[in-house]
Image 1 (cartoon, rainbow, N blue to C red):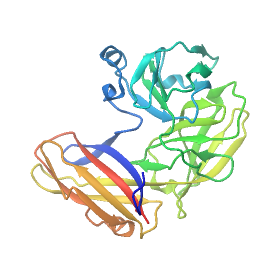
Image 2: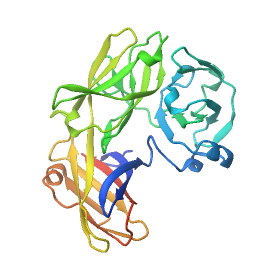
Image 3: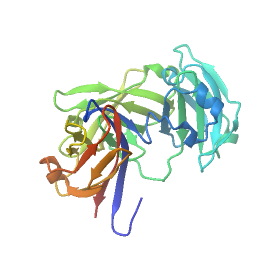
Image 4: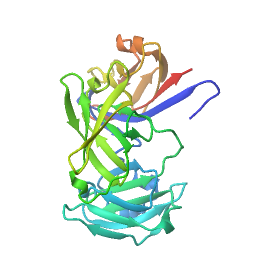
Length: 318
């Protein structure tokens, strides 16, 4: 989103701290897992049936053939449309075929090309596919590009990459990886959905060393014929560190930023939940300061055990 003189790259996440105040796991507000399915217009009957994770992804087109990784849905029970207000529509009949590698091929008719999104509900999970909210240029060099900015949040990356159109017969033979510069090896991700020219992917446990000094990641897509498409794509990321402490005692919150220059500014906005005091709730620091260990905020909690910390991170650039 744009302001008068600033461009904001925004990432909003909720982290879960365990034990007393030691970071353990992440749940993104808008990402691969989201338990608030009712916010997306899914009624109670489907909520009970599809309590497994919600996987959110973007494709630039909803018509034609869409290949779905069965790991993320299992048996598909229903498909519904979404409008631009993300309200759930009626069930739609879309021809679905199970391929020899068990992937699902959806043949979406052109009559649904005006829909803003599709919600594919399955036994093991729900895939919510939407069009990009804002038209933006593709990012990356070569034939493999990202359709949006890339953010790595606590090792998690969710992205859609475009590539020259392919004839897809065995989608399971497509693979995606990101180069780890520390040992020159590739870290594999999962392809959730595939079109003839796009792949929606997810990565977990990415180290900061996947982003080089120029702020680029090397992404490699292996096609079903065994050939590769490689591209360097701009990316940045962060981690937030919460020190262990006793309840009722303020614990420092610090952060790590990678892929950005030291003079760039980052704004952190925290929301204190019940039983928590996060102070200050908002702070802006330069990347160089953050990476030297400057305290971002402190948290004091009355609650032992797992608890969420909600933070929005903005990159501010002139």
